Amino acid sequence: MAQDVGTLTLYREKTLFFDGAHPGPDLEPFARLAIRSNRVVSALSSGGKVRRLVVRGHNIPTTLRLAGRLVDVFKADPAALDGDSAIDWQTLSDAVLSDYDRGFVPETWLAAYVDGTPLYASRPLHPAFDALEAETKGGEVNEPMLKRLAPRIVDIRQTRLRHESRSAVVMNESSDGVRCAVIDRRRGKDAAFSFHVQNPPKKRIRMSATLSMAADLFELQNLYALAERVQRALAEVKGGGALPFSLDQVEAITTRNTQLAALIQAFHETHAVRYRPAPPAYLPVSVRG
Image (cartoon, rainbow, N blue to C red):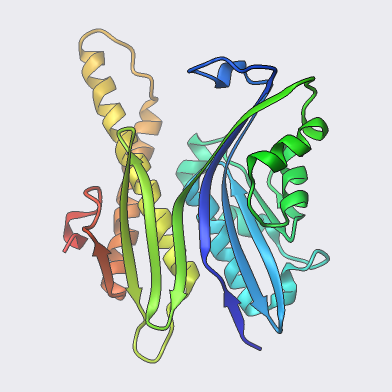
């Protein structure tokens, strides 16, 4: 039985609820409720049945990696994502976390839904997440729906809200491979590029492998920016300031950067990868073409 994974999109989402008129321009401190997460959506088709998969998470890399694991689970057994299946969620969740995540990103969380039904959450989440997914069933989260749901998820008299939803990753399978468009943030500005991973001879590359590659790119970019902050902090320390990073964290950043560079290097050595308009500057020099 053929399984098909539709276009997979990751959105950065933030919703702020206010009681009455909201202030500006720095709105978030005045919100009665702030909901932030990354949200992956995709349609999974098998045997004429279509399920809507949603993966939510604290950061982009772990959210993409869990989505990739669940795509593999679905392709191996479409029924595995039914609500009464016995998926080892702890093992799946642990597998997408790096040692750096475990040691220095304690706020990381993950959750998964199919057709609006919660399947997994790595920690207790605000009830708003379940309410939103039950309402959308894997569809769009928009302001009219949020206003309609507001009385159920936040105690306010007159609802005002601000909702932002921006795509960061769009990935789809094609006859010749997997294509991925990426919009990331660099020094406060959006930067866009895409890459195509060609199918090897007589085989098809797994979408999950390409999702892992995209996750590595995002994590490398995040740690690249963090390493720059460390360098600036070290320069300030020489002038008499205090280092806001522990030495253990500085060492962990360096170690994880080296791991990610090796993973990306290995992926490029194994697969034919083409970037447009050009590879991002934070990639290892040896794979920039």
